[in-house]
View 1 (tube, rainbow, N blue to C red):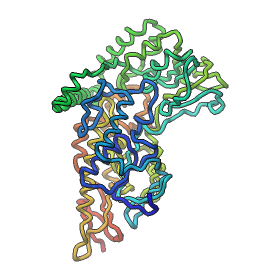
View 2: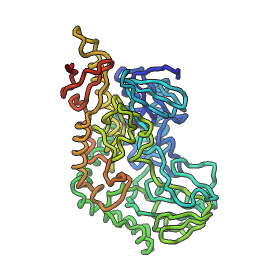
View 3: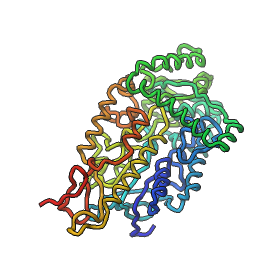
View 4: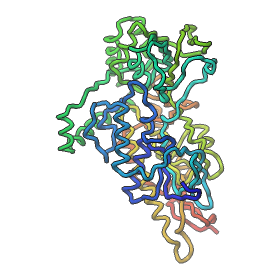
Length: 516
């Protein structure tokens, strides 16, 4: 990229959110944009997570764009390689590659209040943009706990999202730290080949069977020849999950039936009562994400697997010491300890209108307007922002809703940037900055609804909560509710900024008004 390149829109990241934004920009007739990607290929979390057994826990036909249906999914729950191939296909089919700048990690983004634009510094050069769409995603930066002695461990250490495929686990003594969505896929995938596997389980998850199967050739042919059958399949999967939402958000006690099913699933696979006791959660199902696996429990019963019902406390050479005092000698440590979700690193690199970083603005907890706009950061939007996560459905549905909001945001800017009128008011370069009052009002409503959800009342500690105990990640409603809430931009929720006209302010209707 050239030193003084300027674009209308800069998109950060090329996972589902970034590629989706790029497709929508082209559909809106906007071609003056770039996608800045820190890696050398597209895919986001589905590129970075390539650990053994990696697959999606949302059905394939729902975990894909509505505007890019895939009639050729090979399984009902697709593996990482198939999802990554799908994203590569999207990049090609919608002619996005000319817009993508690979190996261009963003180091800093600074708002220029005079020119109403973002100055962006990347490892491959600098540029500026009128609007920034941040689609880095919450599951992009691994989190490894600060364990005393880890730096002096003589063996191999890596996170599930940075799997070292050159390291052969065959016959090795391996420690798996964590029992989240990645761990329950890794454990059964590596158990047959390792010499021994020690699972450090701080909190047991609720696990339901994953009813996965190959999609037959006849089904795939039907979906190709009759596209409406793909849409019908997707619609059915969506509708079932919409009906489930009330149990999570309004009536957590209704989940008792699901809890009994989960306990029955465990009892069928785990006959040892002592092991079963270790694996039985003491919180309401749904408080943490319900995990899907038909292989996890059977793998834990194998003779080369030991479940330590305690977190990892310290490391002494090759010896791992749990919080309960038990010890294990290992050759390798695999961390399945999640990501920096409530303190996303990208926030440390975004400098807003008042000179503060987004991380500083969010020091008491993330919050944004409709999951997209943060006060003090004009013309900057997130895809999968605060309180847009889901506990039971497909994030692609939420992403597409945010793309609707992004598209209307850009339309509103186009209307505001008409040529100046004869009296010199209005027109010219414009930017939208979310009003703090609108951001706070939106988040009060979200947090009020959150109070009775299973995520807040279920008795667990989860990555949904930030350091202050506030749920800043999950959306406490249906995907259709969120779609309605993000269908259009309400200019009353924004201040309109004008280039070169500091005396102008925006009234509550979003129209500029010249002050005396």
